[in-house]
Image (tube, rainbow, N blue to C red; front, side):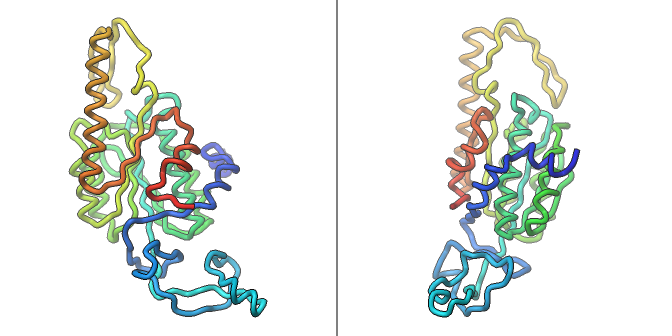
Length: 297
């Protein structure tokens, strides 16, 4: 399948046009290896006006000084002493449990990653993507510029759920091999019997501005099954027979509530951005209305 077709499977042209008006917002300033292309949201602290230069093809129109244009009929852009070099690191859980639901949690997560990556690339940020299973699997980047949009879409469109989950080990390994801090976003259902807390803390120790997008399938929030069932763990292969009656459903809902409260509470306590979404929510609605923690228009 051509790359362009794969990209259109993930995000519609109309939605991409809406995303193009957005920018990433980090709660921290980062000093990268190359001169950045964005102004820090911390005006007057980490960014100072320096000079002007003539406008060049491809320059960001947001930096044009329109007052000078009105006086001289020439385009000049503002230069700043300290511009941020932001690297967006997208970590997508691609373990077998992410294949559950309709749409699957992985398909939904791939669209979210594509949307966030698109916002970063059109704003000339560096964007990298890694697949997370028992360990950090294949990935892309980090790279910069609009020419990387289609390769990013192509990579994400080929994501398939497989293998077990080991978030602590995978995130810890990724943190060790990442040489500089940035904006890190984990997209996952957080369904790991061993937990995820140690892995997330390892990313905080490496000074990442960390966000978690917690995915849940609609079928997990409101199971439609009942009666005598045989359930199989898609990652371990373990099977269990049970009768899903009113009491079992009550216990299930209680444990689900505890699971969600624990995840959100851990993130809040450690200053990690926490964003929960059920996959029956349109991706467009979630990104444009609910991801205000690090998307600004």
